[in-house]
Image (cartoon, rainbow, N blue to C red; front, side):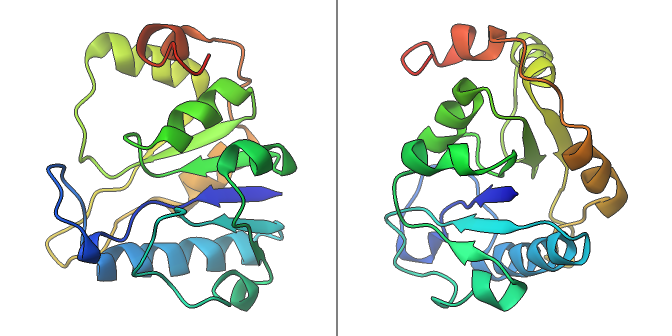
Length: 168
C-alpha cells in the first residue's frame, strides 16, 4: 500500500515559499496515481487537511484508491511506503520519524545543505521531478517505480535528529 501525502494547492494562499502551479501539481498527482494503479499498488491519498482548492472528493477512487482525512500521524501506519512531495510540511518530518520507508519527490524548490541531503538520502529515496518550461513536472517513472519497491530501510535517524528533533 502506497500513501501519497499531498501538498498544498496554493491558489488560495499567499505564501513566502516556492511552489509549482496548481495545474502542474494536479497533473502530476493524476499521472502519479495512474502509474501507481497500473503498477498494482493499493493507494491511499492523504490531502493536506487545510486545503480549500483541491481535487474532487472522489479523486483517489478514480484510481482505485481511497482518501484519508484523519491527521497523517494517525494514518501513515496504514501504508507500506510513503510518497512525500513537500519537505516544508509537518507531515514530511512526522513521516520520516515514523520508520516507514519513504520516497521524497524533489521538485527542486528547496535547497538542502550537503549535510541535510546526505542525511536525507540515508532515510529515504529521492526522485528529482522538476517542473519544466512547459509547466509539467518531469519525472523518471522507472526510477520512481524502483524507489518504491526498493525504498531505503529507515535505519538512519540522522535527518530527524539534525533537522526535526521535535518529532523524533
